[in-house]
Image 1 (cartoon, rainbow, N blue to C red):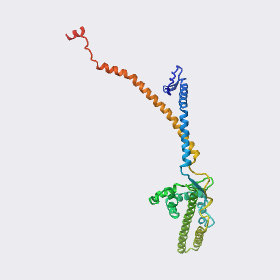
Image 2 (spheres, helix red, strand yellow; image 1 turned 180 degrees about the vertical axis):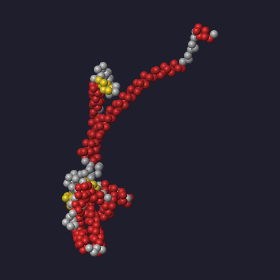
Image 3 (cartoon, one colour; image 1 turned 135 degrees about the vertical axis):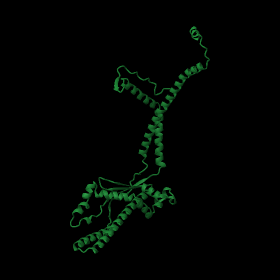
Image 4 (tube, rainbow, N blue to C red; image 1 turned 90 degrees about the vertical axis):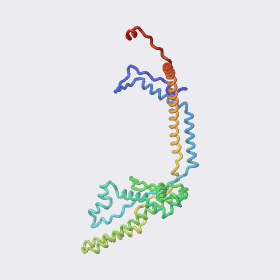
Length: 347
């Protein structure tokens, strides 16, 4: 049977080119490489129908599985623009150092190489992916029964950490540096559930930020009231009263402002196309992988067969020599004849 090493190697010619370190490149080396490549193509061509048949069968099975058996997932998407917190506290006396350092993405933002919008987006993403936020979201809206029970999970056996991993695994938040927007998404097997859960994410995030802002403003206002009661300087008192009024205003605005902390550019929506599985892409990738593996399998199989035949031939050529040596060792040796020179030496 023909193997991939049927062609003999080309002998090196006298005009071989020296490559340094004792290595030489003969004019026939390129021809030998071309012949080796042609042998590979010839070998694969003999098994072409097998390779193509297995590849098409794998692609067909993959498409049928994705269409009939695989769970279809849908992705709800939303786009928001984070709003930087109010920096009015830094604008005492018509601006100055506080305005440069704090307000409007000033010197502090330039020194750090970031904008207020980016910093606020990083804060929002950290909150959305935190264990505390997800746990409160699950308790508030009953996501264990709403989501996980429908996926075959037993609510009684789920630990808080396992629940967090399952819920947060379907959620994703990315910051778009070009537009300054925050892209949110949630994946589920139901379009309605994915859209509803993402809506709850936005509501819970706004409530969390609103609560933090109200608590911060109330704490600042209380501290200012205590400072005013212990200050006798009328000019300082007037400035503290101005700060107190702004903190109270900040607290009230946080409570009543509808678009507090962020603006919704695109509310949660689910595209018509499913998120997963992607039948065409999956089928093509499966076919490519199977095709490569089949080609490698054919070549390796031929190598193994040739190596086995070569080893058998080598053993067959060595066996007569070994038998002859063993036979010679077993045969008794005749004593050497005593010559006249040995007799003289004895006497």
